[in-house]
Image (cartoon, rainbow, N blue to C red):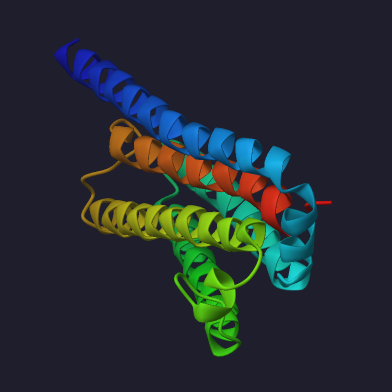
Length: 198
């Protein structure tokens, strides 16, 4: 009974934490909406400068990783340890691939003089500067959350390997999966706001 109470307490704590994350990104999305209302033309032009192929690819990567994380939880609940580990490894690899794509995308922008406080942005239209400022803040913060999520997945992998996470005790893996799903959900909002803005 105590074990179930501990699991319930951990789940409630995780949901409360996720709620604060939603508030954080929700506030940033509201800020985006306010500035988009003031500079719709500059935001649309800024969105056209982003690579939609990489953005779409990263969306697919994160959707696949969400599926494999969920499948990993199902596998451990069914005592399929090896399958759970393999699915977690795929999810971790997807996260890594997402970050690599983002690194090259950011690198391309930096090479063309589009980065925070760049002369081209500061001396250009204010709406364009604000668009890319929000782009770097929101995608950078999201990237940090991807790294945190990957860390949780790596810890879950080790705990499963050591039999600390099992079919009867899987709260840590489940909470790591919830966090990862939130990271993916946030990107579902980020992608159209920046890459598909019209």
